[in-house]
Length: 320
Image 1 (cartoon, rainbow, N blue to C red):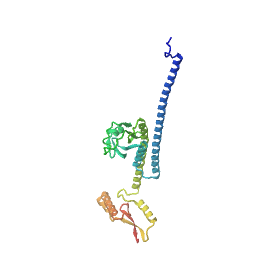
Image 2 (cartoon, one colour; image 1 turned 135 degrees about the horizontal axis):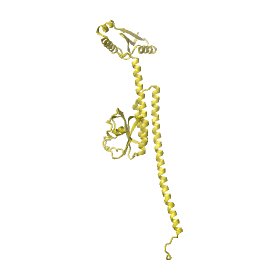
Image 3 (cartoon, one colour; image 1 turned 135 degrees about the vertical axis):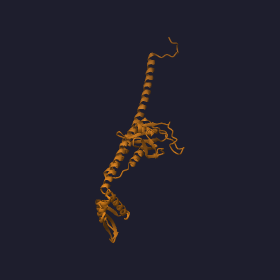
Image 4 (cartoon, one colour; image 1 turned 45 degrees about the horizontal axis):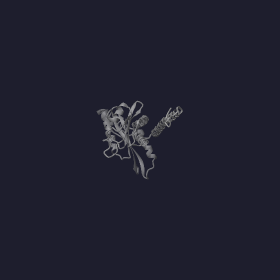
């Protein structure tokens, strides 16, 4: 028997204590698990919000491209570069960043930058530095604080980025360039940030490709129209274009006493040049005449070549 006054816990008491301890342990584990789950849920929600915001911004750029295509408006790809970079910096609250476009299959050229970025005016080879490595591997990179930032800005007192990301901008299998984003201290990017921006890079690359394709097509159409309305030898407006300008001039209001003048010019004995010296000499003579006529009229007047030795001058004159 235990001495009187000695601590004695009955089996039922031990069981009760063990049960309470178990409940406390389970509760603590559950609390920690719930805390981690809540933090993970909040982070996933933040990732989704960031991804949705980036996608919305990109959708606006796509709409800009479509509007330009429908209205046949000149849309420089630089506008898309800037929209992509600005939205990324704004939504990530970044310190700065840049977009470097792939030039051929071996180089990157900075086409857009913002904030304090060392990429301004940079041109590098693939595999050279972080951006070159991303371009060659097409794999996003998360950059930590071990990077040497001494080249970042001229002002040595300026805060260096606490971390950075570099992701490829792709359209299908084609590399359009890379997107660099520098964090604003004390923000430190992690793998989740990198995953979101990497997905965005795929969409952004497609937007850039669409913008460049549209602008290339627009310029081709413009060149086609220019060639169709100009004489290929002299570069002067042909008969169709000059007659169109004549109709516009006749329909336009003019000051009193001003009229439209259309002068026709042909070269005497031009056939003798072709017959005696050859067509190459004849072409050279036509080009020389075209240059002389072009420099002899005012800025608002038009000189046209109707073919052969026929030229015309359209002008507005007082007391015509």
